[in-house]
Length: 103
Image (cartoon, rainbow, N blue to C red; front, top):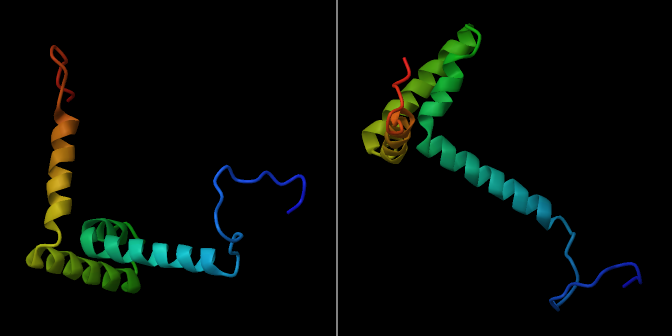
């Protein structure tokens, strides 16, 4: 250990491990997040797809995302997102006492 290195206030066994594991961890975290969002937020994926420039490829993407969104709704995994979205919209319309409703 060099003199200019500041030791940790907590003694941990071994030194830092920089043998590819941080990249592996980040890759796995991104893959899990992507899978989670793909499963539970199909509405956002469809929203992205419908904003693509109209081409034959984007039309197929939109059809696939609409089918996936319908599937997630049919099997019930879209319910938590729908519930949270409804609560968010209710909070957006909430007003303080005496505040006029935005038109």
